[in-house]
Length: 240
Ligand SMILES: [Mn+2]
Image (cartoon, rainbow, N blue to C red; front, top):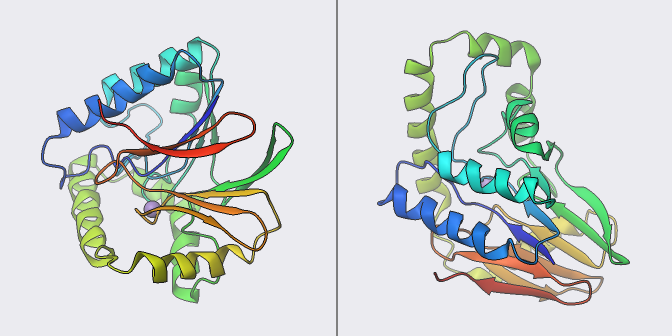
């Protein structure tokens, strides 16, 4: 069984009970251990993360532990970065034992079906301003300079910024219209049987002219996940 989750936003300052939030995710990871062969983390798993060469941010211990247990049990884990967890360098990849991919999307063939999987923030037409910001965030020199600023200053700043960007982007009241927009964005992609995205914080399962559009929801309001058994893709809600 292949599982897909996205937009956990672990560590976000606006989550009322961070311990319970993390525990729900950990319970989910435990629950899939029996039959999971692969797990895709489709971005914005952590609300903010920046790895230094010799230090990493505190927190997330049980979550990382549960991921490591899955990896040790032979589950293939792929983490596609989102717009909140861009700066996963080599620490989690080697420490946990998983693949970390920082591309707008990847193409995979699973049980003979073509999948395109990506967070979704870098799919479709994007403004020059957005593309510029993306290139700054991924600039090696800027990353190196940023890593030289003491985390005492950068971590609170990043969390403040994350909370404010959430406020401005939230309030999708017309899910249908928003889904139409996403469908236009994915029309720029190669054809696939399934296009699996995160980022939008809505749960979508829509048959398009070519292939099916899945938007995974989030773990703030929905606790939703995708499951593919080799022939059927199902969107489910976790409530334990
Ligand atoms: Mn996102």
